[in-house]
Length: 281
Image (cartoon, rainbow, N blue to C red; front, side, top):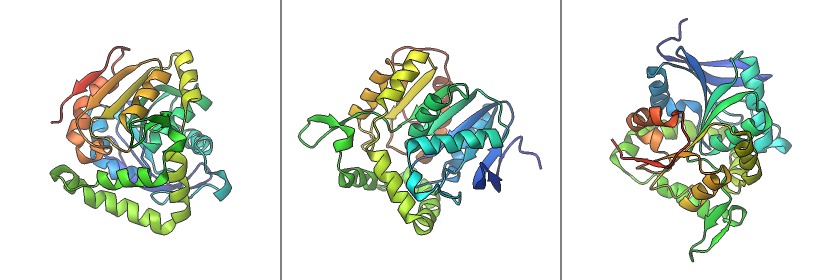
């Protein structure tokens, strides 16, 4: 079966366990890591934009999500998720170093993968990623991310699903993937949520800065799940790499695949300069 022009979704034994993943396209490989509570398939319209620019896409559903077998209950950490992704890359015989695109929680996994397996990652694209060490509380005081209450993080996630024309189009895909995840592995989903909302990857980011790994940082101007203070802290830890700011909420690439396609050339640009602001389509 050819996968040259489309994503083919399958269920295989990879990295020693059942893994749901999508593969397709030709050209230089890119690994896509999805956000919390969802699966790779939630992002299919955006992933097709990567196919359209001549990339071979690998999009696994991370352990505990989308039908992929969960990690051991006592081994839920960004380190263990990154180790699983490294096993996936080896098991799928993907040529390395590989470009890695990570959204939200997947961005944190990508940071840890690049830190722990430096020969595996050639470029890192962080899209509204966790890992920044700062959070501004209700009084405007900047505090460590670990002090952010889980209820606040959940409240902002709820706000992200406010009705809008674009979000309404994406909602069936989000519900189709998120509800089964909660039903199959509720414990895993909430343990990962707790880990993700408090993630502070300043040390790992500083290491990537010293290694001069090409990194692009992307954020959207209506994201309250990953607030600007967290985005700014992440940028600072990386030494202010090239950044792209778009118009949208936390899940903008799910809501608006066309915008994702428009910014792709800038996300993969070979440069390290000031931020670029790109409007919504």
